[in-house]
Length: 96
Image (tube, rainbow, N blue to C red; front, side):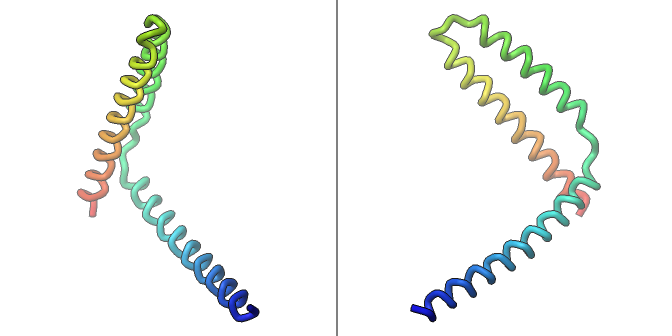
């Protein structure tokens, strides 16, 4: 029983060390990607304006159509986010 507890503690320490090392590597990659990326605050402003207009459009829908409008809005936001992420990924790949 003592050996099992010791083995579990050793495993936890090893996983913690792996997590710390992996987290540092992720932060370094993130810093490099952010330093190479162009500012896209204009896209963020456009998205926030779209979000406001979409929420007004959803509120004007009849109650029976609001769930579909909400799903359509969420789908379009997901698609926009994926497109922005793909553009960022392309920028990172092109800089390497």
